[in-house]
Length: 129
Image (tube, rainbow, N blue to C red; front, top):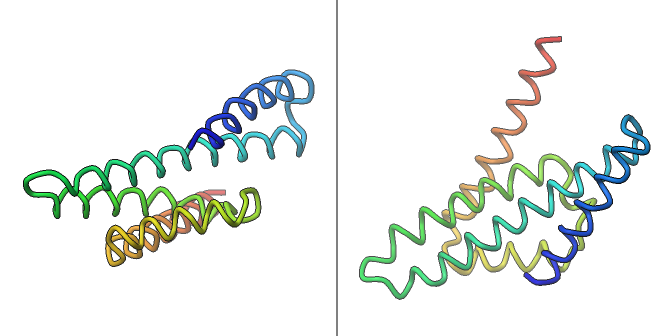
């Protein structure tokens, strides 16, 4: 998690510099996606850590299912937008395994929902042009 925070803050700094120097270039767009991925992966990591701590609660099953499902939605959406191209495979695999270990069904449903929702939004945006 510390590794991802360092990457996120470095990417934010670099994105700001690039957006001032060359705002409408492929490099600026790449930094935008890179920073957004890092922010989303931080969110997914936090959600999965919360799900892990919820196991110690009185009624943990619903909290774990809810949290893992929503982490899966965020993860699936980023997968649609090319997360695997911009991020190290070992970290993506780690998040996937953590989500699967906590609740495999909810993780898969969340990932599929996030991916399909992103695809629907993309198709809707294209159809408006």
